[in-house]
Amino acid sequence: MTSANPIRPSADWIVLKFGGTSVSQRARWDAIGERIRERRAEGVRVLVVVSALSGTTNALQALADSRADAYSRANRAQTIAQRHREFALGLGLDPLTCIGPLLDELAALAQDPRTSLATDCEAALAWEAELLALGERLSSQLGQVYLSANGLPIALCDARQWLRAMPLPNQTGWAQRLSASCALDADSAWRARFAEQGEVLITQGFMAADSAGATTILGRGGSDTSAAYFGALLGARRVEIWTDVPGMFSANPRAVKQARLLTRLDYEEAQEIATTGAKVLHPRCIQPCRLAGVPLWIRDTENPHMAGTVIDATAAPVLGVKAISSRRGIVLVSMESIGMWQQVG
Image 1 (cartoon, one colour):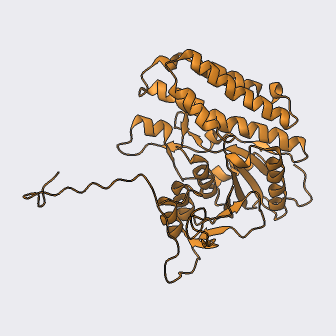
Image 2 (spheres, helix red, strand yellow):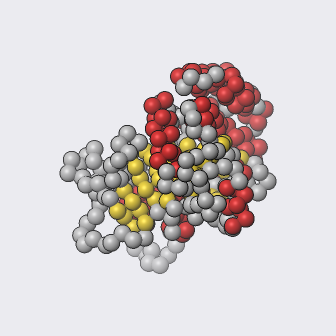
């Protein structure tokens, strides 16, 4: 693509991740275009990672869960397809030429014979992974066509060609297919091949592929994790998570009016806060960035100039309590009995 600021062959990458609420309105896609242009002005390459349109993954999961009812599957597929057709029209795009093949794939998967198999068999899990991945494939396709039509040439990148799921010890078939983890073993040749796709790319969160090239899913919250994997593999300058809140807080701001925005956190601090209740960032996305030394930024899509939260290894320790998190629905069962000392059970 042409640019007033030509990119050096050795230019860094910045990874921008946008969640479901950030890709579900035309105005939000215009904002994504602005963020891309701002980063390009820094003289870097840009990789955009997107989630499915808000609510789509839940709708696809409901379709997967209704596998025994052909009528329900067909209706759910039609509802999902119609929403994306209407969204394409709202973007000023022709649904047939833009996402027609993907909607045909959705209809075919809804009637796939694998739906009649046991839910835990390998073929049924493969079918579910292919189905769930369609949400991100649809949103990335819509975004690529829309941004290109509005003067920002951007190439579509298939995440399954670059994120390789790896088997873990004692991992179930379900986890291998629907809650996968990816290898972080990219080298300079891998990065060079990746860069050949273009200076500005858009790809899918939430999905990868196994060693045979079959679709795998990274689990819920997987788009954050995808962005972190790409950031680590590319040795990115930073990974920016754009969402509907300005960052991590010292407490839940909906429950505590005096909650403070935490503008800087260490990786371990952010991991603790995310694991113990904060929902702004998926806990799995922090480790890849920590291992690679790639900073994570959390930013508010609606308020792009707010400070947000920066997570890296340079955050200075602060005495006292930095944040309070809470989780509901956890039950602790304590059992004790005479004669149980050092006994299993």
